[in-house]
Length: 266
Image (cartoon, rainbow, N blue to C red; front, side):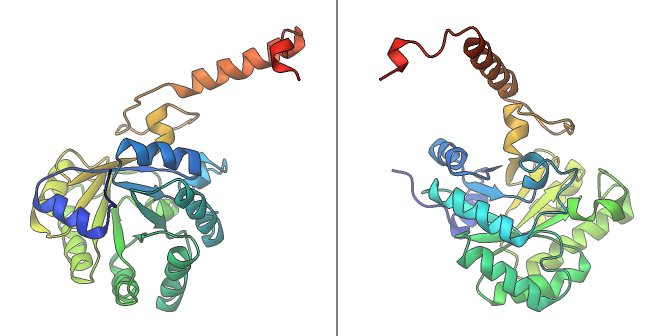
């Protein structure tokens, strides 16, 4: 029987040089399959804005929506650590907002930790949430909630000055009490420098092979409907074709009156 993954588990994996595995989920059936696979972390990400709700980006996602999807994932999960995402404007305005909304995701959503996209302006937000008894994974590098400010999907930490800023931010997040870091679209050597320097685990997405763990969006891994496929994605299946073929077969059989047959009737 698989044991429950906790923040302590992740820290032990870093110390033992065991890789951490993470994927996203927004519903109970997907969470169950991920949980049974032995995944360490299930992120209920604000990526649901794109992959679930059909928005162009994650900005419209609300705290209430994250809570709803955390509840669904929790029903399908017995083993993995559930990481609830803090959506845009759920914590940026004030430390009080950060504590309140992080607390809701834990208390109402059933998440075990929260993820925050952070910069130097959010050190107090992270430390205050941690002091409230809530584990925080700090997301640095490319932060999708700042896409308009960044100006698109761009690698962060390129060049000596930018790399040093990112390394400094990583140290600040560790000092603020973050339980781990998520590094997105960061040069591999910068990720290695950060990973080697910190006591807390790092999880990469488009950040090279040297981080303590890896995460991708499940829809990308499965080859489910997506108009945008970043360079760092590896597709392990082409489920969109399977689903599309099944739908077309169903429609065809209804029209041709070959379904339902006697064995499908009472």
